[in-house]
Image (cartoon, rainbow, N blue to C red):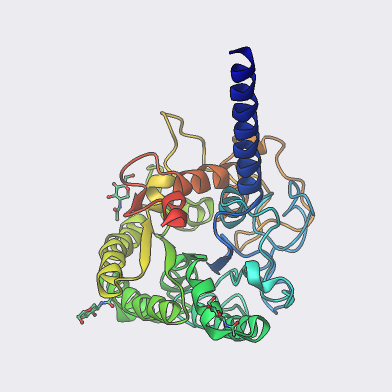
Length: 358
Ligand SMILES: *[C@@H]1O[C@H](CO)[C@@H](O)[C@H](O)[C@H]1NC(C)=O
Ligand SMILES: *[C@@H]1O[C@H](CO)[C@@H](O)[C@H](O)[C@H]1NC(C)=O
Ligand SMILES: *[C@@H]1O[C@H](CO)[C@@H](O)[C@H](O)[C@H]1NC(C)=O
């Protein structure tokens, strides 16, 4: 009897240890083999550093809270894309396309570029940037490099289907295009409603291109509440309201069209899993806190930090780092909710944690 019990416990302990080891092994591995990032300054991790443009953040006080210091990230610490990468289990940050090596490409590449838009001309008043079309060209280049390295087309096709793809683009089609009537003709050509439709027609083609390059798990972020950024508030005024409502209304016309577009893409490509992340919803503060929309650093005329200026000490209770970009604190809140939806409006049809498991 006692012998039998001992045996039972030994078996149980071996079983538990095996399970534990399996768990540890799992937690050392990312949930998906690879993660590709497309978008604008909210996800850029250094692609603009060597470009001739004002839209780069490779100087202090950017990166003041980042482990490696200044990298070109437009915030004090981690970006939304970095944090989602950590939640997916990636130990290292996904490297920028501008410096990525063949050894690194199989875990993913970050193509994000400050100022970039759905339209090629967006952001060009600041200088060069890598538009979404060019980011897709760069991705085609990466896929052929990966295919050469893996030396088995079937394998590569199956491999890239398992990756998570994140797209955060369109903010600069407003900030650095439509809202600058002296630099760009779009606001003279289109009403806000027409502009949203034109942008989404192009975005739909671009997302289809991404699908044709093998992407199957694609998280598409809607636009942020651009009318609540300190830089736009300073430029346009608010008539005593907290935000520039005309901008938020224009941007909302894009968002309300984006969600059904994502569902249409899922219907048309039955083996694809596109999902809409509602930026307005995932960036909504929990509870009744309304922190003032004041930037943390001293601003240049274009809304970025003055080089080498001293950032505010209370970065753990400030929403905005510069005139447009949020602090790491805000980025953690947004990324965590995009990953694990809290409210039914956060993500549709899946949050990113479910997208990874599909
Ligand atoms: C290529 O990859 C496929 C899918 O992983 C595998 O079944 C096949 O055996 C591989 N072919 C060669 C020649 O290694
Ligand atoms: C989906 O397919 C329909 C019918 O072929 C087409 O009219 C529509 O443009 C497609 N939409 C997308 C987003 O691919
Ligand atoms: C996004 O979420 C907000 C709630 O925070 C909701 O009012 C809005 O309708 C949602 N937008 C879309 C396009 O689903």
